[in-house]
Length: 211
Image (cartoon, rainbow, N blue to C red; front, side, top):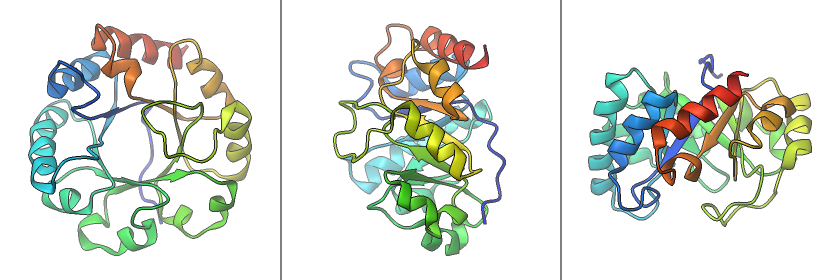
């Protein structure tokens, strides 16, 4: 059973590699000041000890602003640091398994949807929100299956009451369409991490969502 209301609207997915030439900690803090209200740390290519180190640095910032920190797909890191939860995809540990772990029982579990048929499986029941990935194709994630588009979001919205977090090539000009199609929350990587001014970029995105 999911336990958490999902009051978040602007979700930053961040890694050190996405913040070329800048500290990912600085980018995260500026993004929070601009209006990001939940952050996921996604580090695909570093050791567990390095990931834990980055997460412990980042949680100092997220805790300061009372922003939930979600860990992408790494149970070890999630277990070691008192983060808000974990996000998993199709090829990761299943939400049903995660919910049984004592250290995750009261945490947020996010689950990415790549096929409509996933909406019929028991993993959905145990998830607090669903990642709709990708809405539009993107270079930051090349291993995805379906490009959902706006119609895909609308279709998923009709089939589930779970909060929907849309990700994939989202920027200022399509945010409103994605929300109108049925997403509850917008997740971005490069729209903030690659922006000249991450705080301004976050502010503008949040403003667009709230319009």
